[in-house]
Amino acid sequence: MLVRFQSHQVLGRLLHLSLAPVEITVHTEIDLLGESPKADILLLRREGEEWNAAQRARLPDGVRDSAAGHVLLEFKYTASTNENALAQAVAYDHFYRQAQRLPEEHVLTVVLSARTPRKARLAEWGYRELQDGVYRSPLPLLRRVWLLVLNELPPSPHNAYVKLFASREQEREAAFAALGPPIASESPPLQDYVVGLQRTLELKGESGMAEILTPDKIMEMGHEMRQRILETATPEERLVGLTKAERRRLLRLLQEEEGNPSGEEANSRGETA
Image 1 (cartoon, one colour):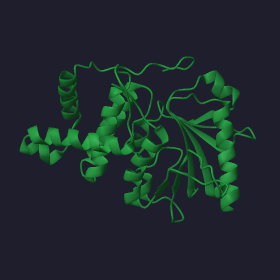
Image 2 (cartoon, rainbow, N blue to C red):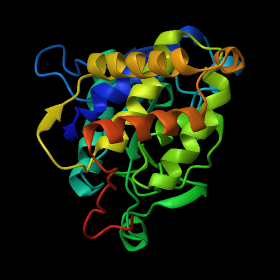
Image 3 (cartoon, rainbow, N blue to C red):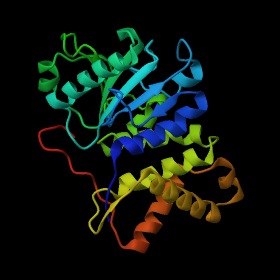
Image 4 (cartoon, rainbow, N blue to C red):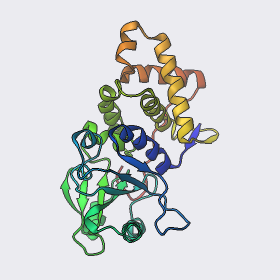
């Protein structure tokens, strides 16, 4: 089965499930000019003067240390990060601040890049690495737009929610592993969604009929998978929740039933994998 999904909506649901408990509001549709059309970007908003410890524990590098209370996220999942993407982000930043009448320091605009741009392109745009995976450009038109390269962010739990969408399989696996212990005590919807998302990303690249998976469908898939694992788990396993080994065991069972080998995501031409 070849699966597709609307990436910003899928990421938006994950961020809502993980950030709402720590009082960060996530918007998946933003009205930049007070009228249609709405932009396909994500908005994170906090109410307090600064990110508290619980919030910083769930926000990625480049965001968690920012003083801005409004964070615009432009997510590039399958498309490459290029001049058009950066120009869009610059426009989003300008029009959002104008519509909300906010000073520059109150808004942070970030491009999340699932794939790794070429070093030559980063140099051309003036982007310099401030810390692993976090880039900023001093050029006048780009200085407002930060760049997070998901493949390069450290596999820390606070980066894991966005690293689940990294293009490199080993980086995604590290992110799922990092989230294992933290979400074991979280709400069932968050656990279900993470499990369903892992299965969705593992299905990408398999041949067969195409299916578009919505956030609701991903949640439903994860719930069914987690229930199947718990039904066959020992009492001790049920206490600790879903482990990486259990996820792999169920994946093998599903692949045997469906007769589908696991596929690998193809690398994008012109970019490093």
